[in-house]
Image 1 (cartoon, rainbow, N blue to C red):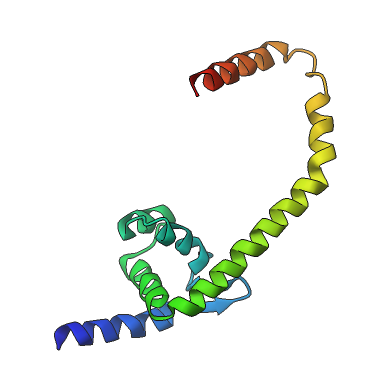
Image 2: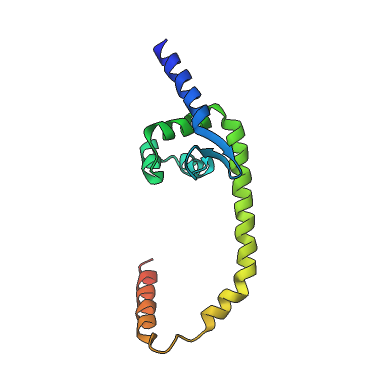
Length: 131
């Protein structure tokens, strides 16, 4: 009985702490979307880690997780759409910037920065040799 009441209270709290904004389902009074939280939920991170990562209160993380649990199909569908749109944007901007990035990479270092660039190249080579 007490557990049922506690679950009902948690669901009610989730309904007030999760709002829909132009960014999608969002934790009230934050810029954190449920899709941000879903990245970590699907990767099976523990709730206390997600809470610390986003600097959420106990009630905020509980509300987010309860909302996801209660509305799993809806949240999952929206999450998949967000992932799809994100990948499309990444590909678009990668294509748009390909020539610019190549141009920047081909430029010679500015005078006086040669030593710093050489140090960066050496560190990169050392890091790649470890892999």
